[in-house]
Length: 115
Length: 113
Image: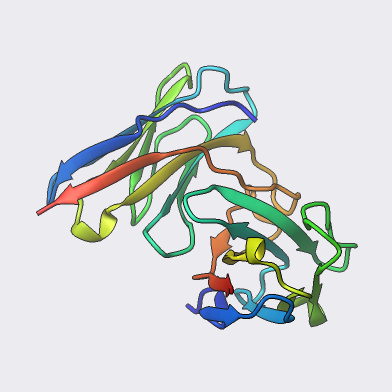
């Protein structure tokens, strides 16, 4: 079946510009995460959506970062006034809720480069 | 979540079994062992998880010792495409809860032709 998809796969932008990253989770998955991974580093949690509950935004590094999830499916991560330190791979993962244990299925990521 | 220890790197010949160890001596009774991997330039990929019984799926087998203080991920017939960093994670499993996945350094498995 179809996995998690993300777009664009690569994004190069200039410092100060806004960017939008999109995540299409696996159909029927009710939970969704955004992470980012800098070169050679581990995963950094950004935000978590679960059904209709208020999202957990505790990982967003600054108020330039925001995310929404429309209709409980597609999610968009927006970074305003991008900085060079925002350069990273942004990963989205979805989870089939209600399972005995949860496992996170990741998309291929969006590689963001801020010049 | 309990801490895990993995060797930084391992090599395996193509077609042979790859056995990746993980120590988790402080694991609690309700914590599961999860394995993920990350192939270069790709997102992480869930492989398998288990509580105390050995588990097998289409990707791998997971052998957990009786005292649950260590486990081994087995790729029965490694291919070049299995070259990746493999992460062993221990956590309480509960569907739908907010779990912020974090990886340690993992084991870089290199499958050689």
